[in-house]
Length: 197
Length: 197
DNA sequence: TATTTTTTCGACCGCTGGTCAAGTATGCTT
DNA sequence: AAGCATACTTGACCAGCGGTCGAAAAAATA
Image (cartoon, rainbow over all chains, first blue to last red; front, top):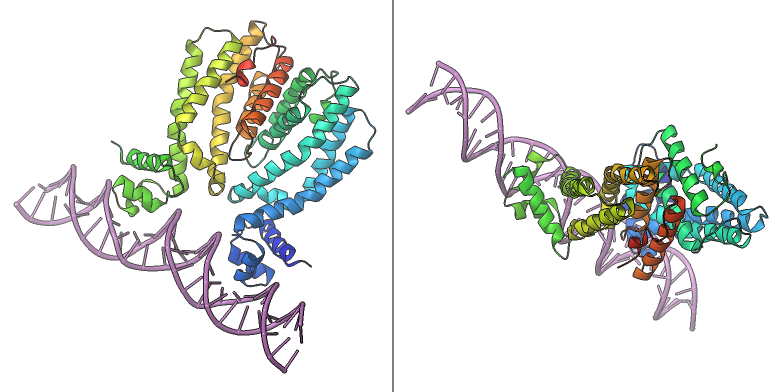
């Protein structure tokens, strides 16, 4: 296997340890079974390792979402729900996700949120465009609107940033659903899936 | 003056310098004209100094916003614009902002964003409620809706997370304005202030 | 085989946030 | 004034960090 990927695996393993283990470059080297200097032969900084890991871990998930959307012939509102559920279940399998929500991993967490938003937003934008074509939505700026929706999802719903109760989350989801239904001139109930589990 | 505030002043001064990066505890001590050990007599960690500074600096800004809103008798849309501009100009004076947008400070950055959102959302919610009373808005969940608006503002517009060009920012602001106008059933153009200037 | 190129390595560097025993200033009690 | 306790100050010191580097080993090329 690629040496770079061995390093990424080592880091991932460290991030998944629940004791909140430190994740220094030396630790990564030790876990990967190589010298610390070798790390810097493949990556030029620790930040670059972070970036590469985020890139690698989320790539497959995003790709699955993309394929799912391309294959689906459902109406836009249903596609929204489908995408939402697919993404939800994928990330819940990602053990790393849970550990990103710890204070000490705030930097990589932030990067991964940015990656998710920029990768998913074109997919969401396509759904909105389809909705506009089929006259079930009205929206002049699908890409930007998608980013707005996702930023709420990434930020406000993030358990690492806010500690909402399930009831509070439901209220927020319901408010978002209403805002979107009116904001996109969609049929009432189109976004019910957001707060129904 | 309070010793703790002298320390905070020293840190603030350092953060306001162009290079910004060098802000070690030793630097703070030197600037404050005290020994490094004394810092730890008043704060138990560097993070705690950060927290105290964020708390101190944002408290006044938020308070100003609150007073401004209480005194204003404008209609809700104008209040929105007023709040938006007041907050914008206040934070632009806050040189600290730049420091928060560096990788290594992601944790405290996240904390300050959360603080901003939870402090400002009740104020925004009150504006929405006023709009509902005056029939210029329609909204069932003002508090949650306020949080949604602010989370877009805190996350998507954050220069530490995303590197949008001014043009891109304007597009997003315009999309948000449209979404809010429709989402709150507000008059067209109510949220123009978001993307003008 | 000889020579060049790629890869590995850990001692080392400057710097960080944080600790601590020792010392000084302050104010209270008698 | 003297004795004493408490509040405060200090910089040398520490472990650990991300990152560097020259030397050595391994692999590729001739």
